[in-house]
Image (cartoon, rainbow, N blue to C red):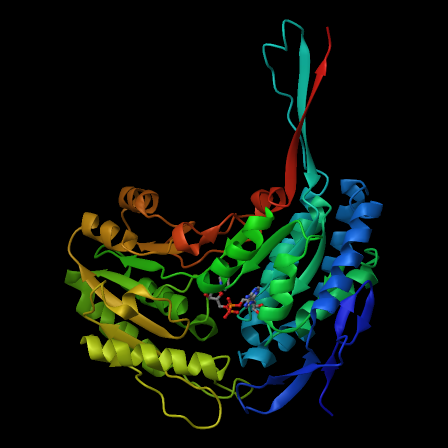
Length: 483
Ligand code: NAD
């Protein structure tokens, strides 16, 4: 029996208005493993109406922060109870070894909910001294109000964690939400909405409409009842969202792609740098926004480093992630398989030196090989465009200034890593790289308390931590004439 997943609107599971369903394909077997409601504009209208009516009634937004915090903490407990099940839902949708979401995504998601719960009663205003108004004394203070109904559009690569990066902070701020999960990974968001109900969060606060981006996502961006769109996904769709929601003056936050540099200096601990760079390249089959895919290595150590990284790549066992000893599954879908192979072809055509992997043959399942190119230049397509697969490009450099210039010579600015034992250099370089998050001697140290987001084409706004909560508020100033 193939399971069927319906929308979750106003506290109820409900089918698409026209009964339509989407097939979810396993990237390992290429067989249908589940079906989900194929959302329509009228489904979006119903979900926004539920979220709006709940917001306007104040049943959520006007609870005290402490009360909201208690309910979000209860939700975190339920997510913790079901953590394995949720991790396995995400893993099976995209063919990922379940150990990865169990060890990383779920603890992070639970931490995000708890951190958000902690902020819920600390969303403070300020008292601002001024010279007064027309000779009279005044008292001016600010307060933060929920931005309103949020449309949350989520990608497929780490779906539950990213959903919680949005849902935890927006609930803390007093907003209500319609979540639009990716076509490939709707199941864990639906489970989160059901857990929100079980936690005692009022019906209509957390809604989920599944289906196609061009229908459900587009309808959310156009809907007059939605106040903010929070989007994580590709820069191409990010542009469409700005064109659709921007003219309607919706608040927009965008978490987009990356081409993050990992800068390895000759004074670094090379073994640790190789391990860290391999993790930054191959974690989640390289389908990570912060993947460290441009590896800049100081020339004196480039050959030794490249050989060691290629050895790690060649030793990774790719296959069905449910099998013992397999540490890398397939990429998530046919489109990804074709995309990754196209880029490997482009690397070969540009004359980069292939040290490991290469173009994958097509059997059953979307399996690609961990691939390393060396002796590349920063103007090659493989160094400029986001591949979103397990492909790394090594580019040699001579001086620190050259490394910084290469790191910044990109349209993107999401993450960066500096590998060095020189503490002054570590700070100098970290402060000079244009990226939202820089790790020194560690790749992508993501934490629910730290702001996350990109510069340039990597996005607009920040998620997580206090910045993530304030992003779901409007700041209002009140001035009182006091004599
Ligand atoms: P995508 O842009 O194709 O899709 C993202 C979401 O947008 C999906 O839910 C999709 O259905 C929806 N969508 C598609 N067309 C739409 C439209 N016209 N209007 C509204 N919504 C629409 O991205 P993807 O392939 O799911 O994810 C991969 C991308 O996400 C990569 O570029 C990756 O770097 C990025 N990403 C960024 C972060 C971050 O934190 N910066 C995190 C994860 C992934």
